[in-house]
View 1: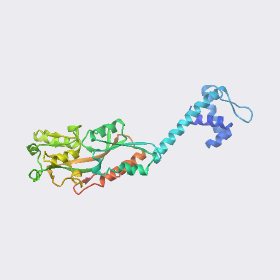
View 2: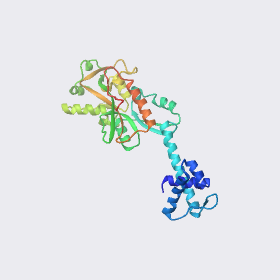
View 3: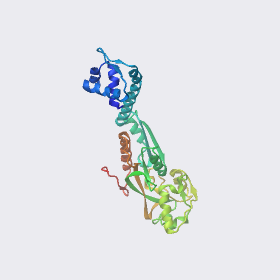
View 4: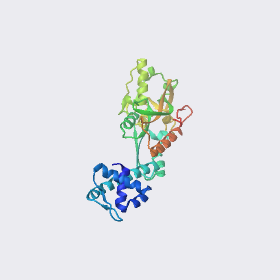
Length: 310
């Protein structure tokens, strides 16, 4: 049975005639009669007693009627749910954002989106980029912002911007010239994102650079947040690498010195979804706001990679 046949049967049963059912469905009376007849022919059983002016259900028709109603309720409910999600009237959006969201203009993302779509449930997950990629890949998140390089197999990646990574120290002497990887071990090293360690995108690039130079990097102190790392550097307990967004923050301590690497390192930000997967319209709206906010933080040395036509 097709959904159209079920519709014809249901409205014929509830309206009492093929003519009335045809008016409800926007069809002709012979079309509705033929759709019901196909069900009867397929199962070799009559659904109506065709006598008099009103259709009367047979035992088979009375058996089918509640099932037809369930099928149509499900179809109507599914249609309503999808329409609500596309129009922003309801639904749930799950989206991954950068862990240090406040430095990238994303602090008010939830506020702005929720004001525009008050009936949509919002789930913003701030994780390390390594975990964002895995969550999008598994379907836990529909899309997300992350920082490369992390494994992005099975993901569709749209580049947004590049931002330089710099070296930071309380020692002006350590920042008098661009930092060479081979000079890093001459002072204690402080690194953040202790949980993910060398899977962190910035650390990963530093480790690859060190490996090429034959340098072993062993952090003296590892902490979870970038704010903790900055505080330790300000206290003179070691040096660290930092995104330019952190250095450009008004909260960044004035007594910490910075310098670029002799061969520049960059964070590359991207919007990711699963391959061959279209974001729902409401998630597209959220992603658009997130990308716009990220691009609003672009500074003089950053490079915009975003292309709206992609």
